[in-house]
Length: 61
Image 1 (cartoon, one colour):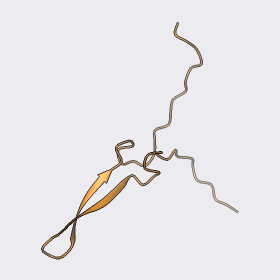
Image 2 (image 1 turned 180 degrees about the vertical axis):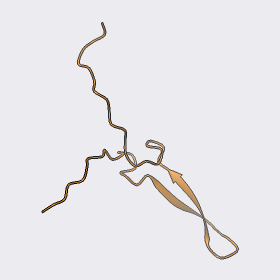
Image 3 (image 1 turned 30 degrees about the horizontal axis):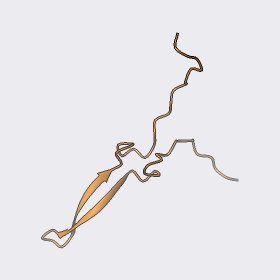
Image 4 (image 1 turned 45 degrees about the vertical axis):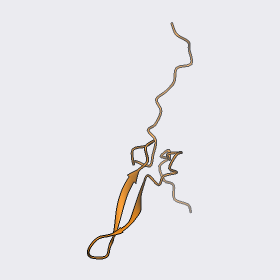
């Protein structure tokens, strides 16, 4: 039987992969690579978008 997870809206810009590590091409003295962590600018690294509040179906009063 399938398990159900709570619905969390995934960011459409990063598709849920909110942060990546990019190598700069250089290495530390111990031989490990220098990396830069970059977060999605749309969701600020959360991977999800905030739930939208209810929108009223009327014009301005």
